[in-house]
Length: 109
Image (cartoon, rainbow, N blue to C red; front, side):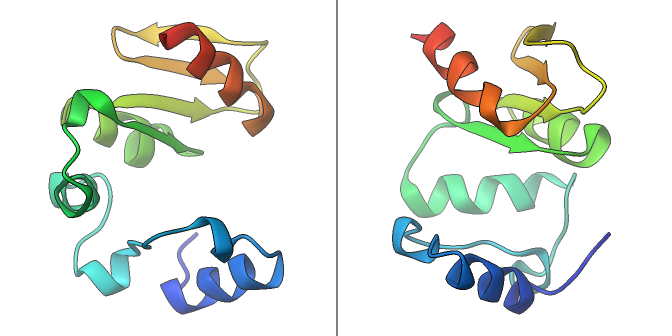
């Protein structure tokens, strides 16, 4: 499902999450879309971060997970059918829900 960045921004504001976000990158505003490399590289360049230093979390395998690992980022695929944290790629994991992302991060130290 796709909706404009303006809608996502409204949701983030409604739930008080925009206070924790420095910058947003939405496909309709960037002018490209996942899994194209530019959609992942634009935020990395904006913050001066190397791909191997970044983690992308998403709920679609092809667009989020594969797109992230193809540019060299770490990827976490939120798959409701998963059972706990499972490594599914050299640079990626599958988790059943977002609550498990902290466990992934702790394991990367």
